[in-house]
Image (cartoon, rainbow, N blue to C red; front, side, top):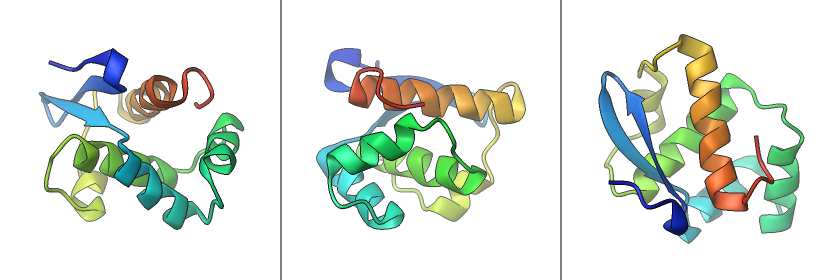
Length: 105
């Protein structure tokens, strides 16, 4: 079960529940992927509210890996969420909110 106090969320992907967490390692992965100099720059980028599908894949993949899943971004790209694109956006928003306390999504 996800522990929101540790930045974890639970989300349904491919018809089953998954825990996602942006650990320090996952955040470092995202800093590198987005060319962000530090966590403040990363939070500011996410706070703009403009994320592409590719951004969502990277964030979800990092969150799944941060929670211990062995999955690559190609596998994440093939996943399905309830309500399609809106469902993915909601999951990303919830994960960023759990990580940055309202600073993302």
